[in-house]
Image 1 (cartoon, one colour):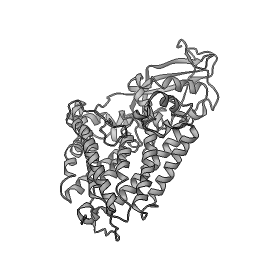
Image 2: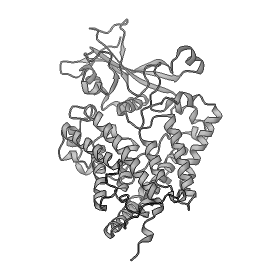
Image 3: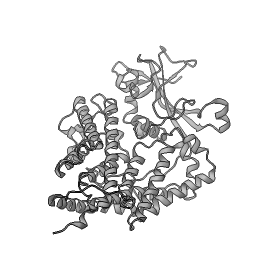
Length: 482
């Protein structure tokens, strides 16, 4: 029996680029986990994994850490994932047998699945499940010495469609400013973590902001359907998505969301039109073909609820319907905040707070703090604590499970926690009191920028965490604010 319909050599180069790019994103994800887990979810972290796995059974959060947890074991998992991802990125498995390549791609997927499923609030972002879904499909793409299986390429198109179309629908169903094209009057200023160019994007003329919104709607609501059109139309649609994602990369820091969407769009490019000739390709074994057909059937079945969610008036954003995150829903910024607030954590080492006390500020690595500091470029790296602080600025309930613990760690001058910050105003010594205030932030005008050199203007508007000190039991005891 001939299986010529089963593979498409015209996507050999785009499959190769997709695999290289996906492996690079895996590498970043594992390095992020390795650098931050001890303070966030380690045995003595803000939301410890051991406490979580005692409370949540394996069937609800499949993870290797239900079998065993220690910080050393977690570190081994992250560095193993990083090592395998690096090997995949450099093509170490390009010419191996199909089963070996599948096993190599399964390793980072299983390991990262284990991390996400115990990561709690720190791993509740859409790009985590997007990486897992793309990573699962990558297992079945085959090594570089074979032609890519057409069914898996179609599944990647279906994933890209849901990412873009889901994001477009959540905008149109959400904030009215997306419908009147004014959301980008505010978004560049109020997004979770502005980048080095966000100030300039914010100060673009308003007609250009409306053009940005129109381009977003066209890319997310029209072009996803063109992905399933004959070539070269599908490649043109994918190329337009890549351009718009590059625009988003330039305008802000969204972890690896935009980079991963670009990676998915690359898989849709028919590189045969560029006359890229693949090397001699081996035929995929029959068992692999049967497995691909079975996986395709599984994805089709699991797609029912995500597809129904797309047409639902109560569309869920960034939601998983299965524990392994095989087919998910996506979306971003269904609502755009019009005013930016920032949580600023401060401390003193005075014996008692007083009206004349000068509070010293903890500086974070990525989120706005010092008004004179230019927003840094962070993405595709992900500063999880910085991102969650943005959610706390929207509502204190987002920090109920971990913000008091953060204050306790700062009062104890916990070294693991302090490593998450850019600057500790006490240089490793223990403060006597800490508090968290909320400030109203806005970008400076062009004139203010010229006169002061500052990027932000801010003013205090309230308290998020009352002034507290360590009690005799080692927990934070609130005191009367001065």
